[in-house]
Length: 111
Length: 119
Image (cartoon, rainbow over the protein chains, first blue to last red):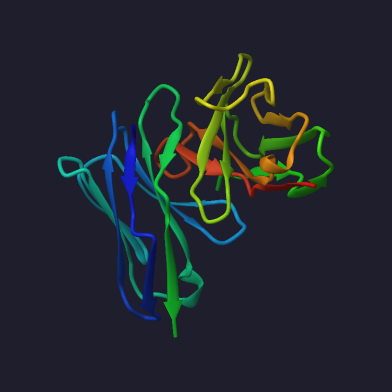
């Protein structure tokens, strides 16, 4: 089977930095995606990593280590609106391109 | 950016009826679309891959006769839940694969989802 693990819940303070980790053990790997999902809404694309290293996009950064099967999403200058679930997803198959999702991390940003 | 729409956004139906959900890519062509299901406080589970002009590929455990998928054009895929029952109540989300790479990658963009409630 495919295993993609994330912490279930995290809490952080407005203005702070938070790191959400994702570890994966999968039969294939063709890239890792991070999505943000607010309650009752569809996921929105945040980042994509296929090579090792850090990808920075504004307040959000994502890191990948393929040898360790590890990724993290870093959120800086947290805002209340960042309270959401963050989903780590692995692209297993270059053919079908379907994503396999982790269970998601619910982030609560407090004042 | 790439936009995917779904219709309806929510639907309530009686047990035994069929419900059709549409997924459209509005500003790009999608040869492949995906249908996911999400139960409360759980992650997305892939149901099937919808391929334009050919049969859908279903994940293990998903009944293809119950969840009918049609991908008639490069911008439209439909999911029909036939003879719906209360256990089919869920949040159904489609995604479309954008080969044009609005984000610089072969990225999937998600529709806003359809909340189905079967009474």
